[in-house]
Image (cartoon, rainbow, N blue to C red; front, side, top):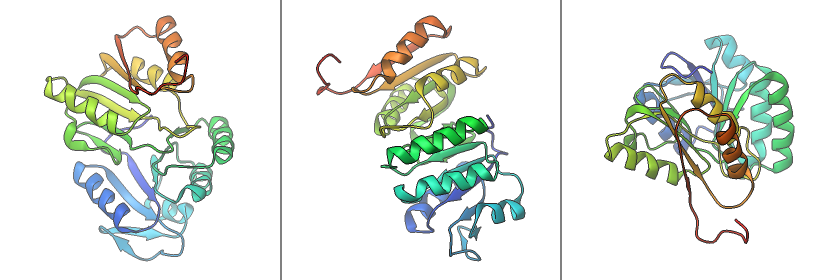
Length: 242
């Protein structure tokens, strides 16, 4: 997994004000965004970034890309991610919410076969504080440190990061796997990544009621993870038995 300021990053999505805003924020944070892909809008520039019609055209122009960040409408996310996978991009963050579950099933099969990591959908992406912002995280809440955060939520992730920062505890990596019904990566995958990350000394897991991902993560932590893990499960209206 390549998460450094030198990593080349692509944005897939409409060149609308929302994307323009986040592209500017990511660039200001030091993220090396090299291009935007938006079919039918090639030849334009947004935030001084060239816009291309297709991922393969963008890569032919800017070279190998490490990560793509997908902002397209949910029913277009499968096609956008499939195009990125075909172009050999190894890390995909889907910011869009409400991607159809069957589309995610198809994407997961392709991603697993090609050993590609997908974050999201319905995710603010990934941040390595002080180094790289891949998505829509509220970067002002973060500070470099040694606590890794893996979450299903968006706003709760920011809240936990802010409380850690106020307590003088910075963060090594923070990722939201997304809160849609089917997500590209799991708690278990990210627990393994954080357990192996030399900059992470402790892990905070932020869960939500419903589903079994938290229970699966708890078993995995007990059996495999060596680092300290603090879990926070939010929500008063949990289903019976949860």
